[in-house]
Length: 487
Image 1 (tube, rainbow, N blue to C red):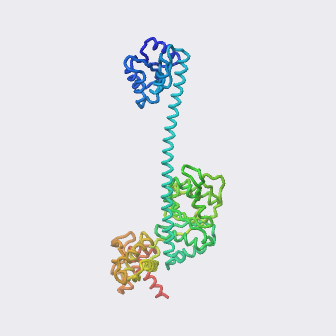
Image 2 (image 1 turned 30 degrees about the vertical axis):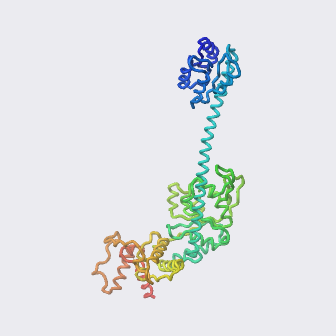
Image 3 (image 1 turned 135 degrees about the horizontal axis):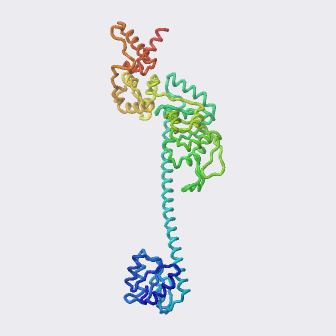
């Protein structure tokens, strides 16, 4: 911006051959308009303009945020120190005195443009680093929050699980069925093989963790840690670190070494609950640990020995998961070196009474009250219920009944069980015998109906009970009475 056309022409002759494009303004107001509109990379500003002082124009330019860093080189015929000091105070970065010297003009323009572009580049990088740092800080905070939340949750779950184990006595399972006897015999066989992996399958609420703790407490590893891990509750981004540990600096937020579950369980048992929910990448790493007996913490250079017995549990159908590509077949075979199935309560109804009485005694002690007895009608109601929630549901029902009971005996009304659906009138098994086909003796007629129902259901007591609309225990009692008569 210059008020002399000759000077403008001279500057154009000097700078345009160097590849620079010039925008021209003859007054201070025009200079401000051009600058705010075109946002030039450098401004050559005459100190003496027709309408405004050059220093005033510079101050207005610098007051605008978009132009604050744009270099301004003053053009002046005055080289007095006071005039130059005023120019620098107004925001100028350099000055050129008239008459112009070609090399000086070109050199100063090139130098300040290079500095300006470098400043812009550095500012962009600084802004990028600031954004990256903000992202990193957010990631660190998120990881720390997730880790703390998981530590708190897993610690609480572990404490609850341990209390449950002590509460219900893992050393001596409650139950008198042949099924429970077979399970206990299996546990006695496997407990001395302290490196054999075990896979426990069964519906939710059937006591899979209690079985795992029984395996641990009955083995040579009993004095070492039992570390339970719910695989479905572990955050995906923390899985490898939580299982195998990490070294300081291994990733963003790793400000200290951390032991993983395998290291925490050294010498003891690592219980992997809901192992069917484990992501495929972690399944591959787990398989390698089981095969090699070693694991590598994240960020470490040397592997560590894994002196750990792995017991896994799932309520999922792993064979179906394998067919669908959601679980590794080789890991399944490696985990299932020894398998234990915890049966649903509906398959062992003879255990309902001893379990219910055990829970009554336990809750009575906790509530500091003498537990009521289990009335015959309440027992029949329990035997008629299918218990889809298994032992856990029975335990909750008994706790509620103990709270509701106002006498010395649990009644059906104290149990808060859902109403039993009436039996279907017709079934795929065909019709039962008509009245004219039944013996006149009541017991013999009942026996005939039960035998016909069992035959139609191919010996399945639960299906036969549903067909007849009676509790399964009634069929079991009749079958037991028949054996007694035969003997």
